[in-house]
Image (cartoon, rainbow over all chains, first blue to last red; front, side, top):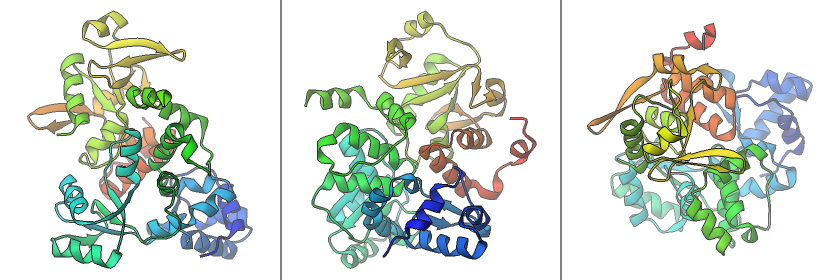
Length: 221
Length: 151
């Protein structure tokens, strides 16, 4: 998977909106055909997502510097190819899946374990074996769909530094996970060799709302 | 029942007629299957003084030049008495809905109010909450107040 830097730069110039159309991109790209090509590139790397009626959304990680986006590619690819499962469609599914599947847990649950900042909702896991994990879930009554709380991610990229991987996955996932990435950077600055850029407003929000016990523990160590 | 739901019930008992806004309201509309931080945003038509809050067991103090309020259980709360992202508190009250948590009830801002508030804020977490509300409720949302602009 290659990254089209021009497509990234065009998308970075778009004003913040909940949804965009190809016409929005055409205003910066120069023409509608170029806009569609750039949009296809952004969808390919997992930064843009097609919605209904010709609209699409962009992940906030688009605003990161190009050098950082390069490090996000494995996470973006894994999230794009993620497979979602559910059985009871509540927290019970997460508990059952954690007992059944071995592998590297990331995003919501791992971020909560590291920061205690946001209540987790979905279990995102890189299973040791994707095929095996899917077989086990299905044998235990899970169905594959779009609304489940168990998300299996294919393994791409480096997992040597587990905190950094959760940090990069959080930035790639965007949305509320950006706050997790900020919390991780505040609490584990020495564990990160790559640093992203966040807005001052978001950093302040995380600092203000981080449980005081976690912040105090961080200062003490 | 999770910790945040329990906290919402306790705050309603302690402070009376409050409407939950922010992530907790979104959380309630999404059947408590969404992420949120542990801070709580509430709208009130009456402004409680520092003394009145402290009588109810709430702690108020200054942190980095800002007044911080914490519930007796340590949750940080923000109280809005004028408007919520430009939407008058009276409107937030008039359009609020009741949500049952076990045998208790709390009031939360309606979906449309939350959509507008999230759209105006548009931080990463707001964008995710906005998308989740649209994806979950889609065509059933009452877009009249959004298009007509009374909010």
